[in-house]
Length: 215
Image (tube, rainbow, N blue to C red; front, side, top):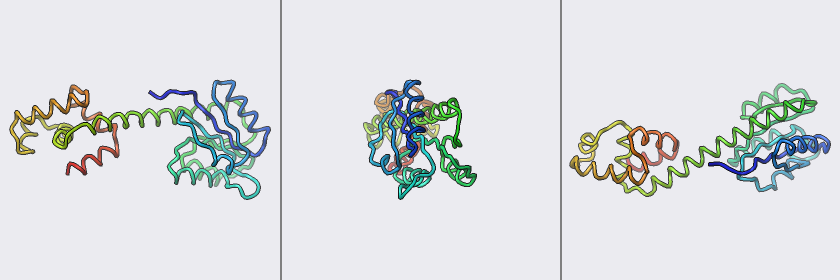
């Protein structure tokens, strides 16, 4: 279960804006960290708690723009949800930001409820991601306890095969197939074939790796 107080990162070169957003977030129970530039944000070690990044689009000087930061985070595998804010009306920029997965794009000035709703959506998105990662991590740990034969049987069960069919596919006796199946189910702490299917589905790409290894 994902736990920990959510944290909101606010990156804006206008001190009044970032302070105001920070105060709003603290009033609603979130931790807050404020940054005056994207360069400053890039030095931060991000929290493992559910998070959201409120990010201005433009910055003075040589600091990366908001879109450049969004691209850099995606390239380095940092999936933090982003709420863009901007003092300039730029349809092209807003469309590009949303195509890349931004939660929202809010023009300044925005209403307090608008920014709070967007941040809430971002945090919930990140919470769901972390929960999925926890499920995959737990599933992977259980699967790693299986023998090669037990993994084969797990995959065949997920295809809907019963013990007799599994035995024929593997060239073993039905009794042997049942013994391996029982051990596999016990290690995975599962009771029914449908639970095996759900386990594999929850693992996503990890399951494809297992299939490739079994093949």
